Image (cartoon, rainbow, N blue to C red; front, side, top):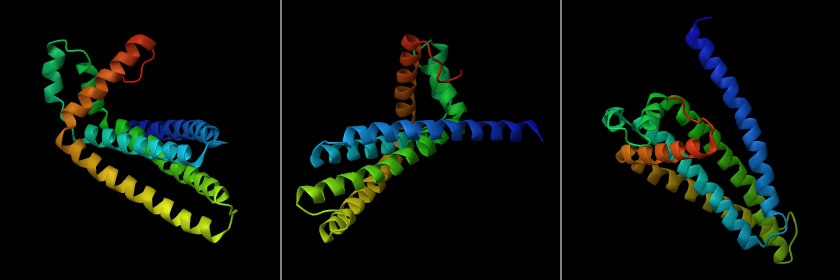
Length: 190
């Protein structure tokens, strides 16, 4: 087996394990947040989850659309975050996989599950239980709204990511650099 294939398989396995762990964590957190809260608060949680997926999708696309050249000149001038930006663009495939596939897909799955809980809470609040006509109607409305919000948000995010990739990558790189500086955890290898 050649080294590129081994590296790819190793990364794929690692990202699958990370996805499993993060999905479990996010599922527990969202379920805990939704347990016993009013349905309106539950809807806010669902839309925050959707926005998280849209935001990370935009970051992944910006990384794949970005160019290294602007960041090399910043790095030569020792601009904070520039080396991280170079690393993000150089590792765009991995960065995009994490942002788009791991966080984005987890957000999509969890927003669906969370919206089902909100629909059930809303149906119960109106005096109807699981399996009622009201629950079915609310489920269709909620699912359609979340799908439209997700797809529309991702369309806007793609536009922004493609047309403003340098600014998005640099902003993200500065956040990561600041996080690494204060937490001592390495997220991006330079």
